[in-house]
Amino acid sequence: MEDLKQVAAKAALDFIKPGQLIGIGAGSTIAHLVNFLKEEVTLAKSITLVTSSFSTRQLLLEHDFQVKEISAVSRLDIYFDGCDQFDHQLNALKSGGGIHTREKLLAAMADKFILLGDGSKYVAQLYSTFPVVIEVIPDAVPFVLQQLKKIFSLANPVIRMGSKKDGAVITENGNLLIDTWFRSFPPLDSLNHRLKEIPGILETSLFYNMAHAAIIAGKKGVEIIRKDPAYPI
Ligand code: 5RP
Image (cartoon, rainbow, N blue to C red; front, side):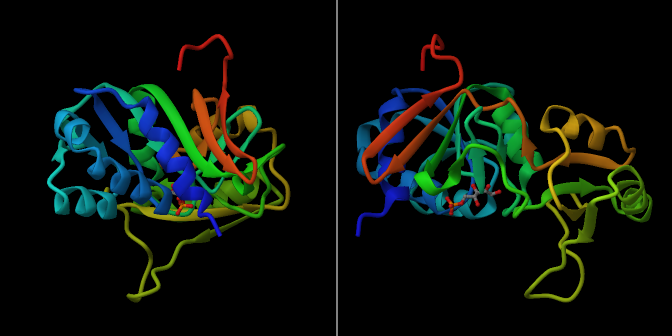
């Protein structure tokens, strides 16, 4: 059976032009994109990449791509990333990797932020089967847990624990992650803002109104969804 993540990744190649500064995120779809890029030798040699992901960076270095640190850039031509789920307005949940702070930073600095996914990720409305993940500075964890329960009565916030080492997951920034499970999501248009008003919260995994386009691979082929149909992507 055809791997639809691979199909979406291949379609993303068409958007990359020689000499560009390209950001890429995490996950298997992005790994497919890197593998397709390395086959396009001339294009691959001409571009520079920046990534939010440790694993993607390892893959890029393994294949001799030109890689820049995030701290060395303030603008990208394009940022490509996968997600757990995205809705018809291209709002996305990027909760799985726990690296959403870096992902959001790269998405925000890109002229074009393009989501990649197979059709199963594209839904009318985001489901609360995924948590909203919150990166929190260590000292603020008890306070943030208390505030989350107080402000969102239907929320169940849980510290993300490591699976291959005892203790909580610690982010690249030395912070903790709180998986915030909602029975149903509060209005999405204000959720990010309401969460970030709580002191100690650095960033959330809800990417509201950020993506410019999505490349979706389904059984009937590839579909490009543009946030603004007039936007030249
Ligand atoms: C990390 C993410 C990933 O992009 C997401 O998990 C997609 O992964 P895959 O391409 O393997 O389905 O959001 O935070």
